[in-house]
Length: 317
Image 1 (cartoon, rainbow, N blue to C red):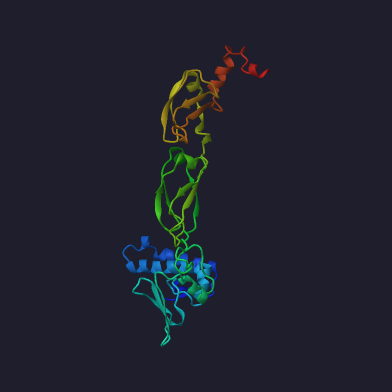
Image 2 (cartoon, rainbow, N blue to C red):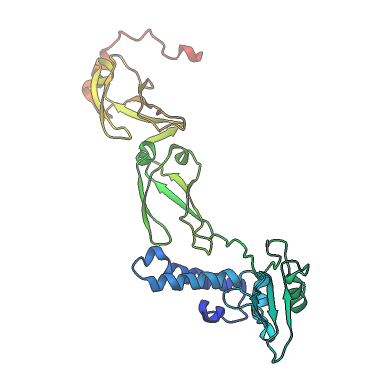
């Protein structure tokens, strides 16, 4: 394996931010998901991940820079120091100098071989490794990549109906996102493994949903409100009319003698509720009178049947 800095394409004195940036760029290019038919890319991905993992560990990086660790994170044997198993099952260590003495530690020996490494490299043992060699045998669990956050603005009707949305992530991957009632209510959705790549695997992604305003629908909790213009004759005589809902047009009956402000309810035509079920569509009737209708003016002028009624009596006037 090449020098770790060369593997990542950074200078030996590069800071952590530079190393992270270089790794993320290479990880995106070499990730196995993008190179399923290219084993060389997968091998290269493993190399850059191993290099990143070691260089992001401050202690191991210092040891590597001093020449105490190799590119695999294993300790180098100084002064030609090597070792082999003795016939008794202990560890037999020999110095590499010609005619050098041999030190034989059998099973019954009380010597701690880790102390030899402490004498050579200094007090580098850590409590994290079961072998007692600390930074040599034990490797810290690699970190996952950073989480990614997205904001998704969706149409009012799509939010009410929980219509799936096709989105493209920063990695270039396109997914069909199933919208939940909780997401429409303001709780971010979490997508496991869809964040930035990292040596310990990719991070997660969160998607916050924003509902676009509508030109005639408004939201009232889980209900949808609509001001519906109707003609005078439809209100007076009653009628069967077509009106819009968040999932298309439907027919509704206007009761005879309806007035402006009367609210009609269409069950189950609102937003999906967090606990299941749906809200309603509340339709407020708004009688629409023509601006210049002479026949209507003449009718009202000659109509005296309602002059004695005061529709504002409940207002105290």
